[in-house]
Image (cartoon, rainbow, N blue to C red; front, top):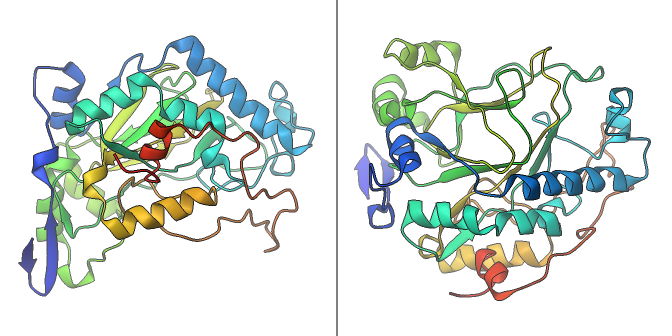
Length: 332
């Protein structure tokens, strides 16, 4: 811990960061650029099967949704979805297919390699299904942000996307500012008022602030990937989920999943995480912190709860010891 003015700055727990440049190409890339693609973390055919299970979940709400008919890709035919095309209510974070994907050996191995331990926790994160060129929903403007507080220093959260669909230049997907993580502490120390820093793990950048990075050679990059690839990025890397262009015709389907060493979580956090798991609720992008114990209701535009709302998954996962350990509900 160090103190800046009256603020307590938390340093990264470096003993858990075991990146060895040049040993693994993607790790070297992750360290230098703040993001990487782990190719084929899941066999492609299995990833496509997970996508079909996600589509089956979407169609389980008894609407006229037809995955093959763009005319049916409307709000009325979909469960409640956020502005960024994610689903986090209805117990979806704990659907069997979501947990099966999170527990894929290649996914676990990648994060175990990154952190230097197999004793990991995983976030109870969202499903993203982005239908291209929806007629009832305008494209969202860029929203460059990071998911780590200025009060935290160093790599403390490695975010992940399990890719279940093709993501080309015209498709929806992850857009990053490569290398921005290396300038983040300088940016906060020289370009922001420290008295405004908040503990909330998130920061949205203005156009002028993004220009500060551009002036230092930091531009944007649309990450392209295939079904089964795992996208990993440092939470200090500026990013956002970009919408498909008018030429994009792929239904983007991904599972957000972040992993961190279980030893980084406090006893109180582990207890709260176990409570959240027991009632099939969702969390943030963080696996070992930011656990918010509240009910994630599906709220309609009029403020009422969706009558189709569910308090538990449609298909529950098998509660193996490994799953319970990843969930923080069983000690390693």
